[in-house]
Amino acid sequence: MSLPNHQPLLGLVTATHTPLHADGSLNLTVVERQAAHLLGHGIETVFIGGSTGESTSLAVEERRALAERWFAVAEGTPMRIVVHVGANCLADARELAAHAEQLGAAAIAAVAPSYFKPRDLDTLVATMAHLAAAAPATPFYYYDIPVLTGLSHSMPDFLAQAPARIPTLAGLKFTNGDLMAFQFLIHADGGKWDILYGCDEQFLGALAMGGTGAVGSGFNFAAPVYQRLLRAFHAGDLATAREEQFRGVRLIKLFASYGYMGATKAAMQMLGIEVGPPRLPNATLTPEQTAKLRAELEAMGFFEWVR
Image (cartoon, rainbow, N blue to C red; front, top):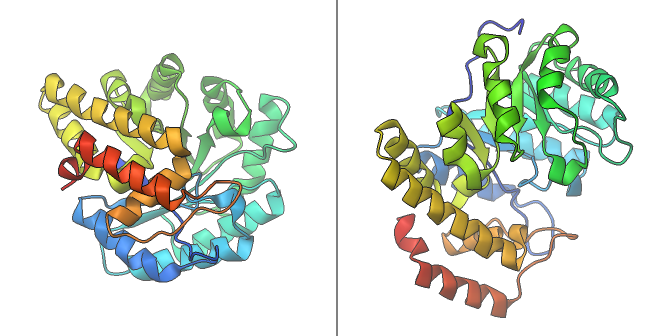
């Protein structure tokens, strides 16, 4: 990468929710509480406007406003901000990339267009190169998330081809359960690339393979769980690390049973961070579902885990 001052994104990077009013409009006053909540749990890097941030349900103007609010709130704090800029319309993505650079983003990241999909690896690299060129002084991460994009190009092959055409490439956000590919990625070019793991449910596995950083939605509502996991792993206490990882897995399974986005936003409300409902097509929990979810979380011990 041609940006020698870039600092790798280590440890826990939280993929934040986009706060909304009950009518679905942006509620940017909540960003200050989100930031304080995360800083209070030792989280100093956020990934805004990504999948957890419902980026595909936001207009470009809303994504710009969201980024501006985060940068205003983070000023004077240790918080670093990574802005997700991916979009089906490349012109929109380039506008968002340039805007993020103007704001001083620590990095930008982007999923590939997924309606008209890059049909082969060469087209994917060309697409990402065109996007990243709009922010020529900002580290760029390609965001691989096959379960949502429907793209399954080889990421080790991407990493072999992309650097020649994306001079700002810093690494990948790898939201992909293929831990074999993950190992090739973290060893590529002598380990020079920053490979952020994106599957909360396999975080411990990624650490065991040599991972050093992760981007996750679970760090919003369960940062203490994952911080304990990380500390236990580095201390060689695998029994504790496994226990904390299994707590994370149980949470994901429970939230997914209700609809992950609506359930995690409801959990944030329970923790006093009023991020509001999701936008359609993600469904909002009914009051009855919310009450049932709270009871299940209490029975599980969730509120003690994250205290």
